Image (cartoon, rainbow, N blue to C red; front, side, top):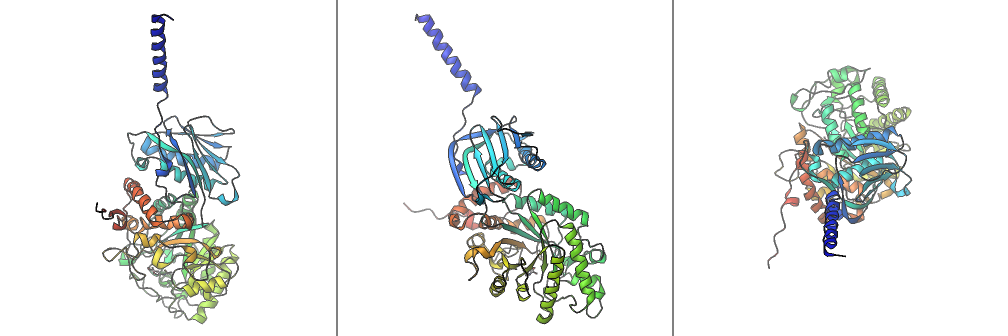
Length: 528
Ligand code: TNX
């Protein structure tokens, strides 16, 4: 080869090299194990490279399933505001080529159940595989958490969207992972409830229990007893204007939740906590006289008249209408703190209500006091206060939802200087909320007895969304991890690091979380 030809070859080689490196920019090396995923997945394997979501990435779903296409659009809409991308969503029968996110229903091992998923990220593609659409939806929440944090911004960001490659296998420890919102003491609009549903969905929760009636307000339209909302829903604690959900509005909340694989559980609290109903219909009172509406925050002073036939007509109508607009399997009948109902009246009352719920094809849930009644197959008790009640319930074959007030009550103050909230069950710091195990909480109650856990937010002192967010976040993220992640892979020190990182996302989302010292105050530096 002469020198000219040699130079020519060198130049050609250099050009080709340059061109290929231009057209295929190097993917940054990234480590999936560095990502702060909450709740922590069952297993994560990192492969050290990255995948970039760009304007040309397509979302594919296998088959023509409307439901999967809907989830595909949900994902596209999550990515859109911050990236500005309008990702196409398409169905396909064969695995798509590169630059795609593929949502696929397939038979996974039984432990993946209805909500488990595999998330597989290579430098060419992302796939989310699950036994059912719910699993795909949960997998999308993980994908969301491994995208750069700016993905949570509401406006377009100048950024590229790389994610680390690897494989995540994940499924929940408990089938029931819930939150409860008390919309009676202070009313929250349907729009606000939907916002809350979105916040819960991000942490793979699957139940929102709505406390729809109490002494201070009746919040769900019952067409056969219209004064319940007209009068009984007109105020709230402090005397402000209350509110209620028309049945059509309630159905919209249910659909919104369903689209996020969240079941709404409606609660009508009885026989106590009923002043709003008693004030609306004199015939529900033993003395036939309607009391005034109540705008204070005392508990335990009201009761339906358990001897009157009227009362059972009322309960039948309410449960029937509620069952008709509730597709989920459960109706919660309260049953707590009936301090002015005699036990000999309380027990037959709960027994009758249970028959009414069953006759309407639903499973009854009640607070732990209902363990005194004759529980039928499938009835569920929600533990909040008394260990003996939970144990009694389990001895009657009931399954238990755990809402220990000293760990899960989101209305408890964090510490002595927290302005909002109550403290009767003690202060609950972020680490207290996280550091406990459901299966060792109550002597004699084991994992097989436990349906799951739920975090209630009572709203005596909580009046708006900013206050709600402050009490809920970040404690509920810890509860979500307790419900999802196996006890053996949970550890406060590891969780704390992930939560601190994750807090930057909460900030970008505009969630008014409590920046607790137990997360943000660094340990004192070790002296050299
Ligand atoms: C107890 S928990 C209640 C509620 C209150 C709450 C305040 C339960 C079943 N009953 O009526 O709102 O304490 O923390």
